[in-house]
Image (cartoon, rainbow, N blue to C red; front, side, top):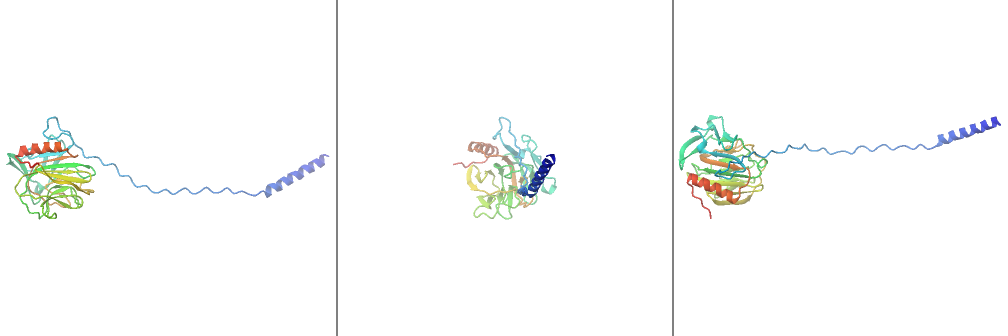
Length: 285
């Protein structure tokens, strides 16, 4: 009986082994390859807005958002290597090259000093940036004259042009009928007909997509479309920068830059202050 039982158990074991050997092998599918990821563009660091100051109470011009304010009366007589205003700390217009240094001339415009550019090599480089990246809105106000009304050679009162018609203003022969022009990023826009040796007060107000100008209180350009791109990282006075100098030939008595648009009331406040100071006649409607 024991032998028969053992024999039966052996038969069952052999049969089980055969079934195990004959069982189909199920293959585990390989994991899918990892999905391809698209390379990401390198993120540019955020651009820091141009630093400004808020003037003390009682200032003769709107107090907030002032990026630059230069007055001829603050400049030392003789060759001008550096021009600044204690009310706007750490902001200068300067050059170390004696050939580029304009001359300060006292008692020229209603008893006030002016900075005189010779139309040859004189130009000052400021340490502010008026390009749209750092200053999306800007208002540039100037009191000046020109010793010539000829639009050639090209001459710029100020600018930061790198060759793409960046923010700049001055004499140019590429705007039919008007010798004083403004760069718009899309080309050259005629602003007004300048007369030599005549003092002017101009307000150039740059928005995100347009520009407007006023000359001696009268509107000349109203929201002309602009297309500004990257520009030189510094504002130049007496020229348009290092790509194209286009040197100014004339006097600058005062120049103010706001890193914002002014309201009509604020603009009138600046115009009234400058017109009274320099004995200019405003031509408001």
